[in-house]
Length: 141
Image (cartoon, rainbow, N blue to C red):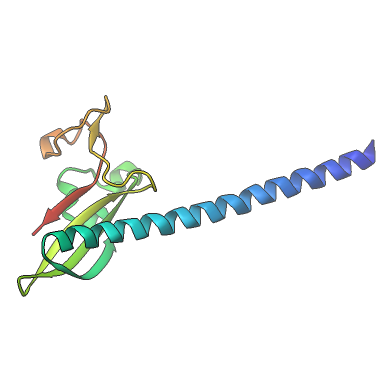
């Protein structure tokens, strides 16, 4: 009986460690794929407008113009599952800036902003308190 307990604990330990390693690998791959998808989407949209991407920089919400319709992460405890990008690009031989809010997740690119009933909602400052989930959004300056 005591031999089974020792062997059982080793087996459980191996399973737990394997699950942890698998989880870390999955999260790493998921993050890399999500970043790659966002950058591809940025390049696709800018190219479709006739521009050429010069630089893509990941920024914090507080350093982006999305703060007009979103509460600061500092106020919410950082619960937004979004990434924010500042894009420098050339269009008609002029430098321009665009901002992109991506939705995290491999299957959520081009997600919509929704209210508490999961209905699409127009993103305006007056709707700020009704918004439950923030989707993809572009701001061109």
